[in-house]
Amino acid sequence: MKHILIFVACLVAGVAHADDALFKDIQGKLIDAPVIHGQFTQSRQLVGVKKPLNATGSFLVDKQRGVIWKAEKPFPSTLRVTRGEILQKNGDQVMMKLSGDKEPTVKTVSSLLFSLFSGDVAALGKLFNAQGNVSGKNWKLALTPKDAALSKLISGIQLTGAGTVEHIQLNAASGDVTQIDMHDVTTAQSLTPAENANFE
Image (cartoon, rainbow, N blue to C red; front, top):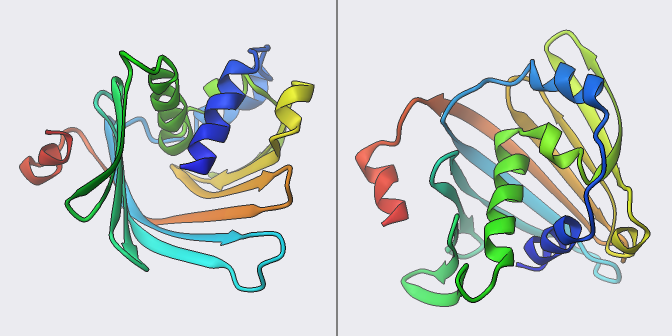
């Protein structure tokens, strides 16, 4: 949840023009599909802590309905982000519930998560300066904050991928580093009944 709130701060910090040519080139490499799902491994290295905090699980992105982020290890936890709500559960127990009616930034979080995990790199470019390259089907993108206030929260984001985003590295200004690898990624035109139940 901490990094989601950082992303919220990124969004409200201000919007600037993106590097249109670079983002257009990368966007053209990405698969345009309504549904993206796969597995993830996540590692967070906190300043002053020797051992990284690791987690594994699965994710589901429906570009119309929202994002489901399910950690399976070290313990079950589910984060569901829709256009009107953020819900975090440990097992069947609701740990956090934020409504867009009461917290206007909830809708903003949803938009950014879609951008990050579905590969809408142009939207990310509104907030960050970008350097990157495209080599064949592969691409790399390094993002640094355009706003001084934003740089006090996050020093940069690195993304790499091909048809989808495959690796995300988030460098917090505090020195904490979060790395997410997404693998076994598949796309679909619609949700299965079981996947659809995640949003009900």
